[in-house]
Figure 1 (cartoon, helix red, strand yellow):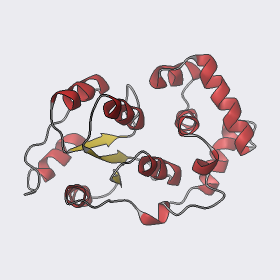
Figure 2: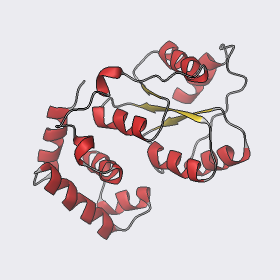
Figure 3: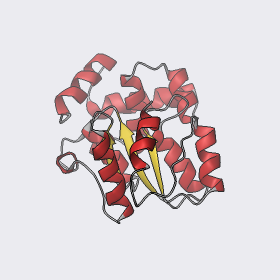
Figure 4: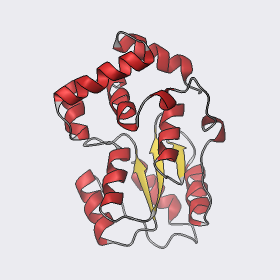
Length: 190
């Protein structure tokens, strides 16, 4: 539904020639390889992967277009991860369709579109303490996924997930998923 609504609003833009929607990571990678795409709008929370991993795989396969990430979450570390990956923008799905359209038009004109208050770094930012992969594992842990499910999404083994989990707990000085969730909630800017 979100893709259909975005497609409808972008069809009105004079800067957008064509809008295509795909339903899976495999379709997205194939489409990005086969077509000259100026801007990809990627959802961070995908069923068969996450948008960050998909973007990295697309770039390694030759994608050179711009990217706008969408998410139902507006956690500071997610927005900063998007920016660190080289994305041109981030929009929360709760925003209006006009905001998404504005973001697309700004990006196509050469600007970026991020909630600026979320990009200001401080010593206490979780994303400064953890690596990109540790952040991905942490996000999945907070969603309640098992080590096996996380491993499948990130294309790593269960043992590797366990290692990342231990490193996350050590770096953030927590001893459980519950205390991790509380820490993330306390440090997030909403």
